[in-house]
Image (cartoon, rainbow, N blue to C red; front, side, top):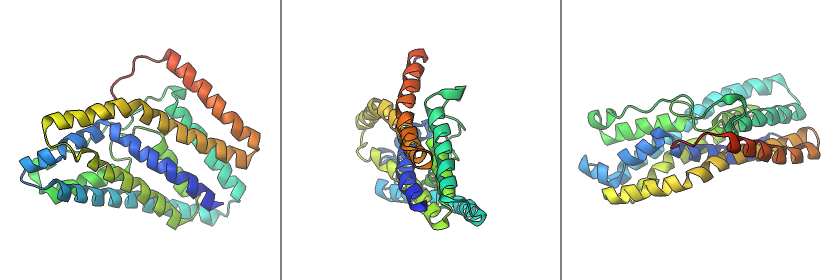
Length: 254
């Protein structure tokens, strides 16, 4: 059963990591580490970006190792497969509800950015890897989706330390690789086009982050309770999202 949790945790991790691109910290990174800005500092973008990816992977590994410790503890409890899947279902319902606006929790939370003074103080490998680690760790900067917490929770509920590490690494790799979105920004105009495309994709990213959690909740609920329970979650989530949109204030820049 842990393999089922792993298979669902991986897409949750990937989408949650990708959603972080639209955080103020993520957008700042895409403006601060580009071919244009790195050339201005006398550095090569590909080298700095590679260090950023390495940092992201290490950040994801750090997150995965912490989850692995908790997963080992869960494994020691000897919980049944049905109990683990039931907990996964409950957690996915809670996190999906947060992204859908239930409970009055407004995303993003933990509004912290990396220290951009590093760009002036340190060499490219240091700020590249340092920023990448913070981004890849997932909970050290802006958290744009409760899917980050679902990722961590599912890693723990695998009850398998190695699987927890795999989930963390996947999250960190996606977060770190996002730096290459700005690889075409050789001029101010090109950088502006990158951000225009990101602005246009922001609503889809928000929907994707909630949707993957809803689908995970539906699958887990169907396995833990009854297939009809899983089927019922999707229209219920759609109704909640519709009500939320009708009563929402004008959206701010993500």
